[in-house]
Length: 110
Length: 204
Image (cartoon, rainbow over all chains, first blue to last red):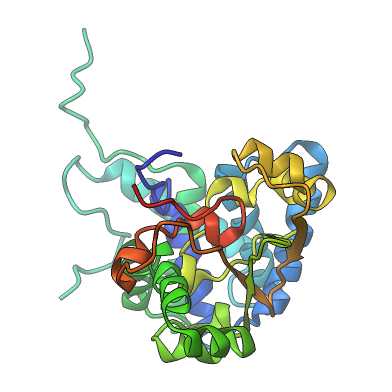
């Protein structure tokens, strides 16, 4: 066995989507057994097409499940997510390297 | 003209799923449904404070303190909460103890239920289809692949975690660990030994 511990999260976005979900649960908005059932169903569906390795494809299923739940709850509709995602893409592409990336109209945090 | 990698005209674009997560965060923050500071706190907690070292302390204490062992086997949720390990994802913890006649092994066939406050984020193999399908079907072969060979008289029991019940395996205390302190004992307890895909280290 390797003495070096595995990194907790392989990619920053894995950590972000994990934290977002845990936060929604801790705030009492997302019921965990309901989440597990939904996530299990997504994994099962994805697992039909290919064998999931438990890494990137695991968090892809996680994100898809969360997006589906948020859309159903009316908290974040798919078209709204697509719009804000496009805003972020544009913000990255128009921000000089090394500068903090912010959405248009967003002011610097205090 | 050769491209100079040190002179990106714009910021490095994160991968597509990362932008989708950022979009969700932005939308939920604007609606007041989440607190971005809480997200950072959760990530920091999981990266620095929560991990198998917590479960190892629980196991070491159970080895060293018979009263705690009894309490842990009776009501693990209460016993580990008392040590400060609790959370919504470990509301109901059950400790299962390995003995010469029974080896315990944990899987989550549904998704990846795992006692986070005790073991942290599960490793990729625990979340893989291969482990989730095979742990139940052929546990001895899976154990052999992890390098664990059990005597024939030891039965293997596989526990399927759910969103409600998370299992913690108490591995057998290794020979040669007599007289060690709780802190030293904790150093023998590996993550895999608490999932049941490994054994505790034998002191050198």
